[in-house]
Length: 145
Image 1 (cartoon, rainbow, N blue to C red):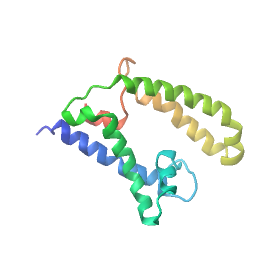
Image 2: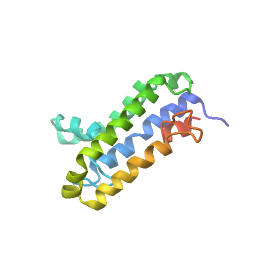
Image 3: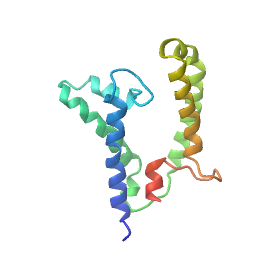
Image 4: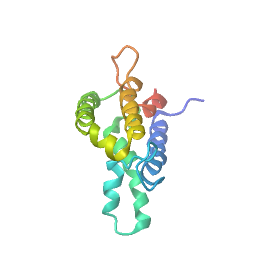
């Protein structure tokens, strides 16, 4: 039995909570699995009560629905703004790595810095179709296709 496109979108959005929890709260310091992403770490600083810190794990799912609201209507096309955003993020990431390479080696260590570089270099290859015509949104779009 085929799953409804809207239900798929809802499940994918909800599935973003667990990785956000792991990436933000699984260790007390930055690691390859817990890099303290700014998307969830910075808002946690502004929550007054410690149990509310875990509410920041909902942010990626909420942003997923705000960015891809057409998925809730059953449309699975990739918006042009996604291609533009991915291109801009790729360029900005390259600039960031070039500018902070020495800092990363000195303060975070070679092992961590090289792992982050490998993950960053693998991401565009993983999120782009083999013919480079269509940008995917990683695992969420793989599920929706």
